[in-house]
Image (cartoon, rainbow, N blue to C red):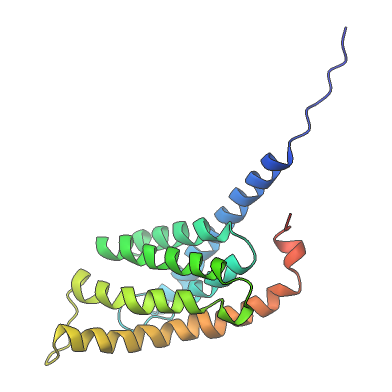
Length: 181
């Protein structure tokens, strides 16, 4: 009778499982933080300060954050009752921002730039064409400029200030939290 030795999971299996768990946790935290901001009236429309957008700096630490942020934003937009264009294109803006953060991960202070730009450019279009939010007396182009300012300001607060505070706090523990391999 042969002794059976339990198979040791390969490094690839461990790595993919770890990435899946990290992505799921990031998505869950994104949803919870969006619900908190939504309960305070800060998650949607012209002036947005989604606390969850601070998480868009996480691709600086792990690529698992990219699908986690996308799925978290997608679920948040569905669960908070957003319009279909917001669900699709708002989530796409977060995905683009997260991919940009990962691409610029060598430069710490660039981490929030892509999420800020992606949302500042895309979300105003959603507000105008997805929700029909036009300011009386303004053309769609003028509204776009106005919403770029308001959404951009919220993104600077969420991603730029809160995100960089989060990045700085996590950087000290990145090897323990993200188990970089």
